[in-house]
Image (tube, rainbow, N blue to C red):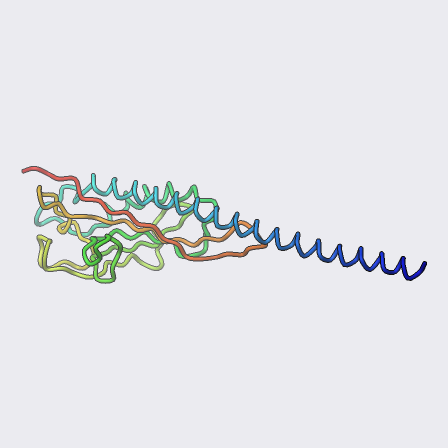
Length: 207
């Protein structure tokens, strides 16, 4: 009798352990699937944000720049940053303390329009909660070009004089968003740096 009871208890214990392992494995799979789907949802929102920003930048163009005016692009880029950030702020899984940068650039080196290190680019660190340009690190205006720009003494970055809107040679403009993503599931603690970009041609001005 005792041996039978012991055998039954051992069998029940083994079944309980096996069930616990299976349940834990299923929870891990479900958490992983949820984390991936949440990431895909945030990426869709990020893609919509940069598309909207690129369209807005295309309409702004060079904001009516004329030779002799300042070529600094910050005033134009601020409006683009606000457009991108206001949409990106709807992403629920952005890491507020991670790097959140918006880059406005001239897509030139890569055939698919993605940002290349040699492209003219304006890089802004942004505070996600307020959409304000962060004071630190300061904005970076990288690279200069002797072609496709009006002025020859550019200070770097995608300056206004490079944003040509004369048909049929309108310049192109890209917008890239880089942000930190953290999965909302504690069982699947996925954290990564993600990005999305969009490219469009500037709206032409006919003279």
